[in-house]
Length: 121
Image (cartoon, one colour):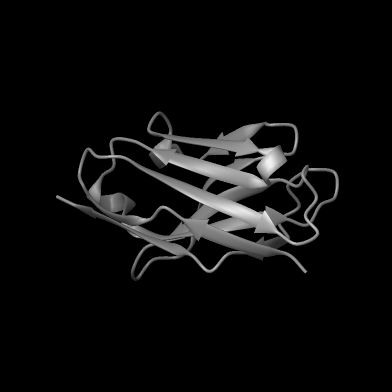
């Protein structure tokens, strides 16, 4: 069983920055792909950014150039640095850990419980 613990959410003004962290605990495989999804009120959940076990990253077009995903395999942690935040970034952000043992993205995930990000205008 694997557990994902997110932190770093909060309230910030537009143009500000936040850094989300997600620690994968218990029997983790350091090379699993990880990432972040988000769900805004009244909207469907969407992928924000992913990073494979080898470090390949992908971003939602809406966050390219503003958000950066990174990982520290030694700490089983994935980060999401969010800069130049906009009110439309307001959402619950969820960490994911992919089940694929080779570090690829299979679409089958463990999910964290989420952390709230609110961006005021």
